Image (cartoon, rainbow, N blue to C red; front, side, top):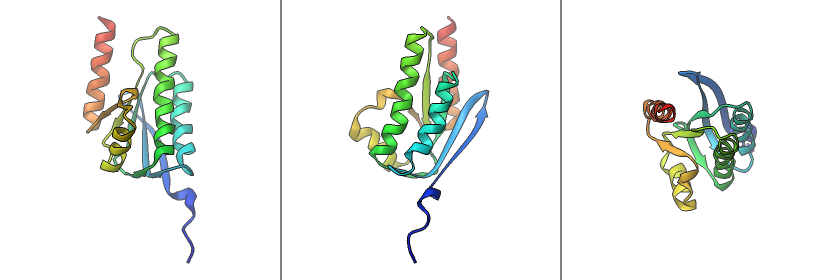
Length: 135
């Protein structure tokens, strides 16, 4: 048998938690599937959201193309907020696997986004930023 249909190696699900968009990415994010992840997150940035949580708990694999797709969204978020002189602007990655975390370590650009272990940590971090921004 041949290789399974490659388009189903990734699933991107959108929902919200505490009024913050939640993007759940499952499977593999590589050169072939990265545009799907990028499209979902970039669409939220373009829609004006200043906080986005991306749950990577079930993302088994990410290559440099997948990394660049998400990193581009993180950088765009920060640039948009700077141009609009709006405080905040953060994309928080939740629970990346060791292989995904290694991509961020190798490319040494963890500053472009925030990485935390749990959804509760992500929410606490974003709430804390809101509180600091309103002071």
